[in-house]
Each structure stands twice: as C-alpha cells, then as structure tokens.
Amino acid sequence: MQLDCRTAVPSCGVTMTTRAFRGSQSEFRFDIHVNLEGYTLFLLFRFQSKMADTSAESPKLKGDDASLSFTQSPDLRSVLVTSVLNLEKLDTDLYRGKHHWVPRTQRLFGGQIVGQALVAAAKSVSEDLYAHSLHCYFVRAGDPKVPVLYQVERIRDGRSFCVRAVKAIQHGQPILICQASFHMLQPSPLEHQFTMPSVPPPDTLFTVEELIQQYLSDPSLADNTKQGLNKILADEVPIEVKPVNPADFYRRVPMEPKKLFWVRSKGHIGNADMKLHCCVAAYVSDYAFLGTTMLPYPQYRTQFLASLDHTMWFHNKFRADQWMLYECESPWAGGSRGLVQGRLWRQDGVLAASCAQEGVLRVKDMTRSNL
Image (cartoon, rainbow, N blue to C red):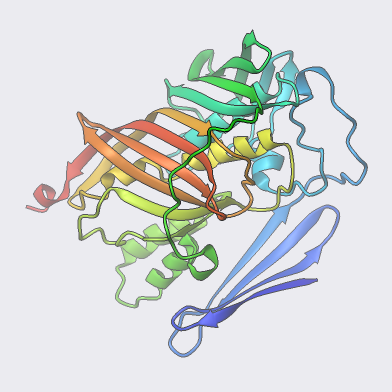
C-alpha cells in the first residue's frame, strides 16, 4: 500500500490519494478529498487496468517497429499508452486503431486521431530520429463506432530528416491527412526562447473535477446545471487538467482570449522513447484548445465547433506524464473561424512544444433567444 498526502491550505481543504492495492494485472486507486468546517466532502474512486505482465524485458524490435514499442517498459500504465494510442499492425506501414475516447459530442476526439497518426508515422523511422513537427488537416468527422486505419507513406529518408505522410481512413475515405517530419538531434550555438509565464505551481491548484465539485456544493445550483456538471464528471478523460485562471463558469463576463492550465497524462509513462511522449503530447494539445476563442463572447453559445487543422512543433525533450503549463491564446476570430496558438512549457521553464489550430465556430446569440 502506498499513501500520498497533500497538506491543507486555507479554503483548499485536504486531498489524500491512497493506492489501496497494486497487483500484476490491476491497480485500484482511491482518491479521497476531505474538506472540513464548511468545506465540501467528496470521494472519488478510480480503477485503472494495467498491462499484462511485462516483467520480462521486451526484445529489441527491428524494421518498421524499431522506433516505437508500447511494451518496452513495465512502467507504461497510462491508459493513453496501453489503449488510446496503441495501434495494431496489419501490414507494412498499415495500422489500425480500435480504442477511442469519445467526448460528449459523440465524434472522435481530434487529438486522438493526430496522436495515433504520429504513432503510425514514428513506427517507420529509425530510433535516432525524433519528431520535430506535424501538420494535419481534419477533412471529415470521425465515426467512433468503427476502427480507424492509418496508412503511412514514406515521402523522404534523408541523412538528418525524414518525412512521412499518414492518412487516417474510415469507410474508405480519409478523415485526417497528416504530414510529420523527424530529425536527428544536432547541437547548435543558436538557442533562444520566450520566457515562461509566472504562474502558481500545479500542487497549489484544483483540478477541473475538484472545481466542478465546488460548484456542485452550491445548494442554489439549478438542477439542469447539476446534470450538466455531472455529465462532465462522468467523462473519463485520460488527462489531468489544473486551470490557472479558470473562466467564470456562468460566463457572465467577457474575458481576454487567453488561458493557462497545467496538464499531464493520467498514469505513469516513465522515461520511454521520446517519440512516445510526443504522441501523447499531440493528443493532449487538442484538449480545450479551440474553446479559447469563445472567452470574449459570454453572450454566445457554440452550436457547432470543430477543428479544421492542427500543427505542432517539438522543441525540447519532455515527459508527457509530468505537469506542463499549456499557454493558449486566440489572436484572431472572424468569418465563422477562429485561430488559436499554444505553448507547452516544462516546469523548469523550458519550452517543450508549440501548437496552432484553426477551427470552425458557429454560434447562437443567447440574448436574442431570451427575448
């Protein structure tokens, strides 16, 4: 048994996490949040499946799969690795993804398709090459009821760069087109970056689930609002998020189109292949990204919101299962589209990755609907 505690601070309560049992096949986790003297009391119980016994060292892979193995370490317990981003090889440069996290929109999550496409591309390059950029177009909505096929095309193999094109296919038609470039690490005297924003550390902040529980503790909360919040809690999102500047839940005040939140994958990944952490980061980067465009417009509600494209650049090594600061901002919106840009920072202030995305936004004026 392992016990981890976070000490109480005023108005924050006590958080205690207990791993009650850990076996070779399963792991039970009990998250107990206790707030006293007017605070909220709530319990969260989680069960997480683990991989089959991987105590024996995995054999060294050769050929197509040399660069990315999901069974190379007994520590890979994150569901993002064991399930969500795991692909089945059907043939040379042809893979199938069968495990999907489906958001409340009932469409495939774009970040998962991007992450799986990068997994497929990474399997075709050698171990000494690392992903440095990817450019994707979402061309059709994904169907969560059927698997996704990933077809890899080897565009170019150079001495220091390799380029791959990946098509994600459902029902015989592409739903995503992705190009990924891989680079051999090379030292350079030219190095600079922006300065990481100064924000509270993640240990001092609440998760999204904890913030929702605080809203639910309000006895005056409307029933329909409670139902909506409980639906959000029911979503088994495989990442953890701690907002730095959480928006007003009721969206009564216009806000600058910027937000900051700490993010990491749930579960432990460890010091795995850097390509694997890039694939997880590609998944994470699409979470709540496009919603940044809506912060200045509390009078509008989205009727339709979807990503059109997604781009990432990977700058430095990082671990996706450790807290990173996601800095998101929207420099422009118009023509029923919005542009968002993001930066992922390691806790030590190193810029890990940059992102950009454009999406379609169709909204409804709530002030007119109430007339």
